Length: 456
Image (tube, rainbow, N blue to C red):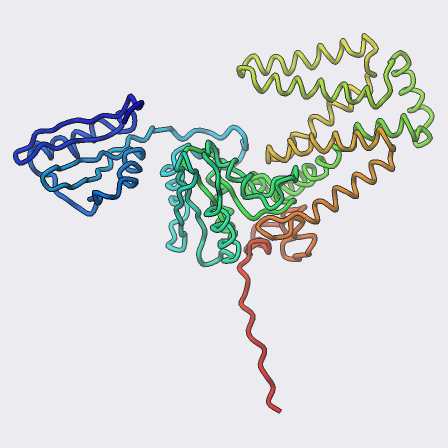
């Protein structure tokens, strides 16, 4: 194998023949290789088994080597024997960083597919937990496993998922999020149409609800589908907390999403087009705070929003300790300096800070990014048409949400179409004893009986 430095061709002398071993030194475990291949060959105890590969099947031989197996070639018998000697990195199970909670389990998935399957199957010890395995990626040959509960899954959803995975045409996958984007029903939408989690308890809850879970090797993210818009505001902690507290926090997250996209645009609309909407004292204070600001409210808001985005990105890309310092100190220093330099008003600093905090309320990180993107659409609409522009933007937003689907299921379930039983676990979370049903978005479709023909 020219150009592959870790490819090893090793000759082993046996009592009957000279055997050639072919493997990648970077993928095999040396101890396993010695115990399962070299020593049995030397002692003459290595037996042929069902792992014998036909001589003409070169593609299977190459695939076995690239997956970490060792190929033993016996010239006299003209036989290729595959022995699994893959050395998987032992990644320890750590605490989740992106979906941290105070109550409940905190361990996270790893980048090992076998470990992730074990974390789920230790929680669901049921023969109805089924799995389908696939290999995707024309260059990487990445292993993917689809998990589902056979007794409650919607078979139509399962068929759609399998069809999407089998028809994926992509050179390689570094993370499950790439597969998620390729499976989207609406690739141009800013809203996530599948939920990605790195918590085993989240994946198990989804399976018990009749959802489909997709695991990928070398990725600690697990794809859950189908989902609805409202479920993106549900935290795993909601089910470990008291129902009243969980309902309050869930409501704050949901309305926080809409507040974060209208707070600063409303500032632009009111000061530019509709000052009569404010009480005189409030309007007077705003005008005094903006007395020396040379920019329009639109440019003022756009400047501060971009500064916040720059601080956020700089803090995320820097080392952890430095990033936290930059985020806190940079925000205070730049905000104070901007007000003293009369670039922005002190009122806007407060509104931008509140808007930034509200954007972090959704438990789903992709949804947080979506709220930031949507805010700029509303800012542009407010800058051009004021409150009328915001109303147009809201009309477009609701129309867009109503047209979205997740595995052909309505994105706005359970509101449209209405699923009355699902309302018990939507804006509010009722006590656990009332939540013993499969959500309508994932429920298996009952087979309709053919109509009985009446005898004439």
